[in-house]
Every structure is written in C-alpha cells, then in structure tokens.
Amino acid sequence: MFSFASLLLLAAAVNASVLTLHSPRFSVTSSGGPHLRSEPISLVHKTPEPVTLSPTDMLKLTFQVIDADSGKGVQPQQTFLRFYDEESGEEGIQPIRVTSGGKAKFELNMAKVPPSLPATSKAALKVSLIIGTPNYSPFKISLFDLFLPPSHPVTPHPDEASFHPLPFIEHTFRPEPTQPPRPISAFFVGLVLSPWIVLLGLWVQISPRVPRLFSAKILPFTATLGAFEVLLLWYWVDLKLGEVLLYGGILGVVMLFSGKYALASISERRLGSQK
Image (cartoon, rainbow, N blue to C red; front, side):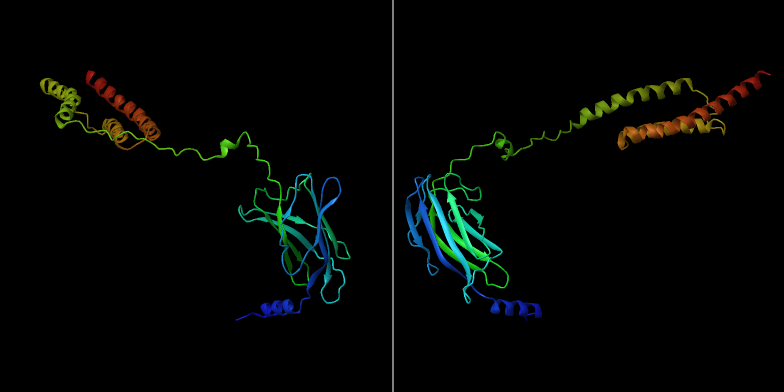
C-alpha cells in the first residue's frame, strides 16, 4: 500500500519534463591540430566504432541541454561524464560545466589526464553522460567506448610492506608438567616434616612446662602467633603477596601490644615470686 508521500512522488515523476541533447558531437584532434575524427552522437544508440586516443591526442565533446518540449536551453544542476572499466570495476566521474543557455564543452587532453579517470589497461572504458536537475526526469545516455593508453604502473610506496598481512603467529606452549612418582613425593614430604618430628621428640624428652601459656594475659599473644602461621598457610594456598603484607601488618600491630602485655604479666609474676 503506497503512502500519500509516495503517491506525490509518483505523480511528480509522471508530470516531470524531459531533457534531451541538441547537436551532440565529439571530435578527436592530434597535437598538431588536424581533426582525426569528428562525428555526431546518436541519442538512440551508442556510437558503434570505439574512440581511440594516443598519448598526444585530445577528445572534445560538445552538446546543448534543452527542454524536449519547448526546445529552450536548460542549465542542469548536475552534469557528469562516467568512465567505467567493466574488467576492473573501477569508474571515474568527471563533472561538466554547463552555461545558462544549456551549452557544454568537455576536453580530455591526454597530455594532462585528469585524476578522476580510473587506471586504464587494454580494455575500453564505457563513457556515458548523466544529467540531473529538479522538475526534469533523470537523463542518461551511453556515448561510446573509449580506448586510452595504458596507465603507468604505480610506484610502490616504501612503507607498503608494513600494511601487508603478516604471517600467522602460532604459539607453542610447553607440555603440562608431569607429576613425580608417589614414593618420591612421599619422601620429600617426610623430609620437610622431619624437623617437626625431631622437635616433638625433644619436647617429649624434656617435658617443658607452660602452665600460663593459655592464661588470659598471654593467650592473645599466643593466638596472634597462631594467626601468623595460618596466614602463611593461606598465602601458600590462595593469597597474593600484597594481601599477605596487609594482613601481616595488621597482625603485627596486634602482636606488638599483646606481646608487650604478656611480657609485662610474666615480669610481674616473677617479681612477685621473688618477694
């Protein structure tokens, strides 16, 4: 279902005036001046014989844009020549200046080729004329096939290689470390625990007495020592070094005051026993 705006656009397209060309003609001249070729351009079909230019030739194109009904000259807003290479798919658009009376003239000098033309090879360029202006239907006509001298190869930029894709990087990782045999692991575990076994054996022989180790005044210091051991074990399992330093600093402050308090209580007990 068409909207109201679509219907308006369709009605405007139907009622739009038609453009046409008056006396379209092209000519090819050499550097010396004589005309090598000069022909009118048909609005019905494309020029059958291609146009060939040498490095010293010049192509001239003249025409007048007129209203098909009144025959008066029209100055369109947009007038372009399109040069299209079917093999490479590249195209070049060259604007053309049109006077208020609709007259236009275009010159292609092979001694000074405009940069808008695509790079040429042995294939022909399809040349077409495109005209557009308000209140008129778009106008497009195929003019002729154009053979130009092949373009010079492009000099590679010194940094061109830097923009090419690099070879794919394949990472080679070391294989996963294998676990040693269980007897060897058990031997080293026993080697690590052997000092504790020796220490416990010596403690059993001397039977040390620590009657006040878990008293109310010394227990905070003992608990802080145990907390340090737990912190080191936690660091070995999960914690990072920064976290260990943070928690260790907090425990160090607690240990400082609890140790001072524990030593003070032991000193008071010894002084009291001497009296």
